[in-house]
Image 1 (tube, rainbow, N blue to C red):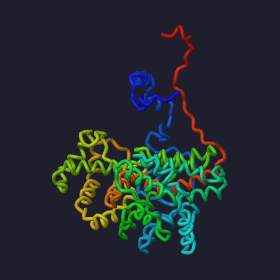
Image 2: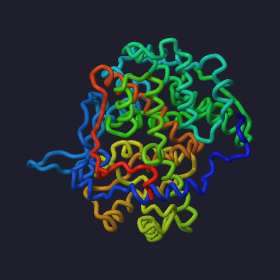
Image 3: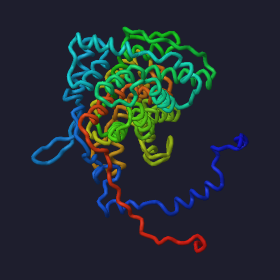
Amino acid sequence: MPIDKSIDYSAITPEIEALTQHYLKDHIIKPEKYVKYAVNRGLRDLNGNGVLTGLTEISEIQSSKMVDGEKVPCAGKLYYRGVDVEQIVAGFVNEKRCGFEETVYLLLFGALPNAAQLAEFRTLLAGYRSLPTNFVRDVILKAPSADMMNTLARSVLTLYSYDAHANDNSIENVLRQSLQLIALFPLLSVYGYHAYSHYVLDQSLYIHNPIPELSTAENLLHILRADGTYTELEARILDLALVLHAEHGGGNNSTFTMHVVTSSGTDTYSAVAAALASLKGPKHGGANIKVVQMFDDMKQTLPDWKDEAAIEQYLRALLHKEAFDKAGLIYGMGHAVYSLSDPRANVFQQFVEMLAKEKGRHEEYELYAAVARLAPQIIAEERRIYKGVSPNIDFYSGFVYSMLDLPLELYTPIFAVSRIAGWSAHRMEELLNAGKIIRPAYKCVQPRMAYVPLEARG
């Protein structure tokens, strides 16, 4: 039977609307039931802290310390394999070189590489930075999508078909697959955007090949831009962004997804696609986009960006659901774990100002700085909060990406370009140490009902 092409299968029909209303009427679980049955909703306790569900050696977040037997908030710290991220950044910044590759090495192997090991590792990644013959033409260009995360996930799943050992979950094979994906993510993301830009936005199509001696950040800018050029500061700040997003404690949604899916015994490509699906969610990977959009609205609303009284009034309007998207949020403020400060934001902030000066956008940077200073005070006055609020890394990363002239569609894929490093480390850790499939428990609160014959139903 041929398909009826006159039917719009994406339409919400009256029948669907009626079924939806029926569903919403009967199936909302009241919040008090979570308290009654002591259920940690969202795997968080009543104070918002994550429930301990596993052990890891890969990274650690510190947001509090014990003082006289009491847990008190402290300045946030982030450790990769026990090494303070701020020290990692200071190391490669002082030596005026990119640091993402050594960060990947540290996350995967648990030790900082020496000069020879780092050079060999960079060469290994460069060798994997090549897609199968005709992959760009047959896979990426033939099915452009407005959502680059879906494009990226589709490309990852398609790579399964090109791998003769796709289902081999031995550590050596998963390491090989992981290194290939780490090397290919910039290409898959940028080429996916080029396909969308050409076929949907009617822009010129160009595909640049990566250059072996360039770093991940340098290659990303090279293949993205029509002329392939970039400044040293641009490359170093994008590299810094990749380092700061590479891993984050293991408990974030996409990394937990990687653990859960890996525990089922599935292949690397499926596990990475699942993590990508998690990161795509606006509550996880899309926060920096919301920050940029919020500031765009703020800049249009405020006639004087230096008027702090007007800035404060706008921020209160945000919290009162009277401005921007009426969600009642100041995007980029606060974090699920950090309270006094997000160490990634602290590291990023000083470099953001440098880039703003180079790009002639220092006045805009001053607006960001004013919001960063005022918002925590206003939130503390307007909200009942159980811990401090401070700017998180998303507060600055979107501004950086806009100054780098990165299209909005690539903000979350660039997050994935970085986080694939942490995902890979966690996948190997799960395979090496776990023996059981992850299976959390849910308590059923639906009352028992008797079966009613069809003819007796109302």
